[in-house]
Image (cartoon, rainbow, N blue to C red; front, side, top):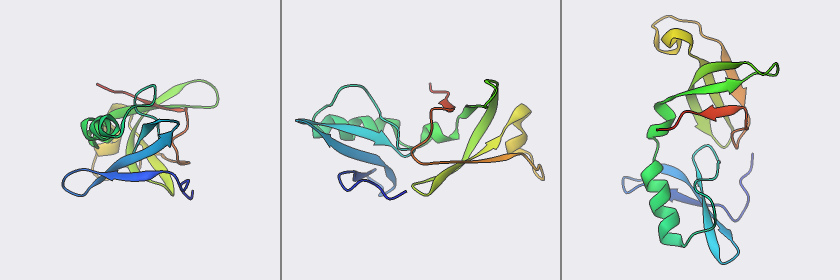
Length: 121
């Protein structure tokens, strides 16, 4: 996906991209590396940066859930995330981390669809 022209990339102090800041009326809305909104109402620029810095990339390492068409959910781990798409790997019983495992792979669009449920915290 080509990013909208008004999405401004935000990087951590070490140069790693952690998301975007999007103008919205008189404020800004931060979006994480999956393209999802962070926070609620528009905030000022500095707060948008702080929200993205606080979220950083650590949440990507957590287990998440992928809601299937039949409504069931599967545990998954994020394997890749870019504006070209998001790749998640089935992670029942930690299979995504097992050496030699051939876990099922799912290719998702960017921004992440609602079916990818983030386990935050």
